[in-house]
Image (cartoon, rainbow, N blue to C red; front, side):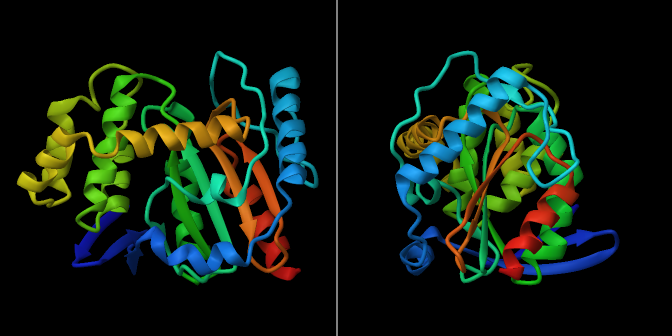
Length: 269
């Protein structure tokens, strides 16, 4: 998928068709958060049950679908679930991709070095963008869960630095377009700078941002959010409906049809 940018807008080219969208800061979601009042203990119980099922049974089926769960990058340590709030989902993430007032928000917890995150990006994310984000039905937020190694943090930090120039999602896409495994240097410092040049960032500002390590705390807080939710691997997704306050978890690099079915179900209620 090719990307062209102009100020706060950028264009995705998918299958020969161009789509233009504006990138918005997370500050615009304040009104959105006020409309989502899901009891934290209820959410915690649901998520805990999902995580236990994944840990003990591995590959199973999502309720209401016949699709098998796809493998995901696993965290070796067990996490104790704790009480969570809506801010656990919404804070410490990327800028919003899509209409901030869309009836559905899709939140992804991912690691740029994660194999299955790249599988989702290549096979599913583009279709979601074309069919649901561009039509104003869904917006997207990416949150870091840097579980693989130092280059995961390096890549995540670089994406947040690109966000300062209104290009988080362009840089996000560039990282996955250049994915080449785990801890083998493709997301090292030299390539991080090359990706910034490809994304046409102001290099002086980008280098200064990375040198300051100004987003390390944000990444750490996002990791803490993932742990609070009991996430045991990447990618992990949460679909939040503003209309009926429903939250549904999706584990692993599921095919597009799984997301489509959940989106349509939420849009119908």
